[in-house]
Length: 188
Image (cartoon, rainbow, N blue to C red; front, side, top):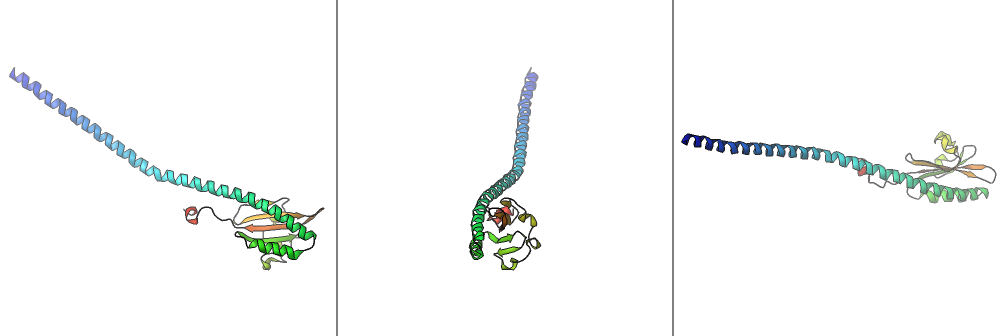
């Protein structure tokens, strides 16, 4: 009987220790899985951040182009009216003053008035006065029937200057937009 009690006692002591080992191994496996999951998530966070940053940049740039387009087209329409009036009154000096004032604004690189034959009559860059427009600039800018905006940098704008019965010429402007995001953010 003494032997039977000893055997049962030994079985009981080995039983709980193997159960404790099983629990310990289970906890270790869970910890390894948790650490693995955290490491995986840690490698995914920079990718997710990069993706969100790129989406933000794209949204800002698209919004900037949309706003620039609206503002510049509106400004170009009103500017054409002023140039038209000066052309109808044969006041090229006044047009030249308009151009020189406008080119002082940040972003405006060059403003040109092209006659119906395609010759630059007035330009803020005096080297371009008197030349054939298509020798230095894209010809499609002269073929537009309404205010035209191209968002390549610098922006290209053109608008026909029309008189009562005919086209008097074309007003062309090159505009370099100001970035809303710093260059360091755009370049990354």
